Amino acid sequence: MAPNTTPTSITPTLAFAGSAAATALWFAALVAVPELQRSDLSIIVARIAVHLIVLGGTWAALSRTSFITSERTWAWLAIAVPLTLWHGAAWFIVAHGLLLPGAVSIPLLPLMIVVPTAIVITLLSRSDRIGVLLDVMPVNWLIGLQAYRVIGGVFLANWLAGTTPGVFALPAGTGDVITGLMALPTAAVLASGRPGSTRAALFWNLFGIADLVVAVTMGALTTPGPLQQLALDHPNLTTGTYPTAIIPAFTVPTSLVLHALSLRQLLRRTRGAATIAV
Image (cartoon, rainbow, N blue to C red; front, side, top):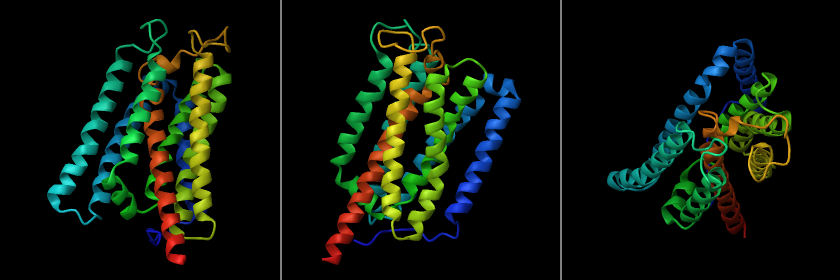
């Protein structure tokens, strides 16, 4: 099967410049207007916007399949309803302070990251309809979508404000910003079909996954609890505070799912192209 790409006039350089300019303006606003940062409005708006974009993109991808209207509708609902319930449950837990140190007796945040991610990836990997969806969806969509990862720069803003330890904020925030900044350029390269574009997309996915692993690890090591080994004199409290905690509680696991889907899509296209070549 030949790669399914979407023609685009946007060059990787232009995509990076646009992403960098928008990110710089957003970050400058957070630093220059402390009230904006304290209100956490940017996180709330971004999370809602990303959720709607994912649902809209899913419907657009389904529209490319040969499914009849009723099949597309049920397939969309089968994705949209569980995703929305997952998002709502995570928001409820975060809003009620259940991720604050000592709020519950179990390691709730690690469970919220590992368990749903493992279940969702397992179910999606075994779904034939998801396979069909990935085959007709342009390979750059799942990558370009994660431009939202620049929102992790909020940790850097918190570090500058003195509310988050640098040992967590610097690797977590920097890795997120790099992943987000490179999402659109990587998507543009992939859409152009240039030689090496698939390798670049695979590398971007692996870097994005590594960033999430580092962020979760450093978060556990700096947050008050049995795993804390760092930042003992200035513990990391933001990962349990509303609404910033929605990032590790929901954004991290859903980002891991998007990476898994993107890797599956890239590998399916690569195997398909190799089969045709043979």
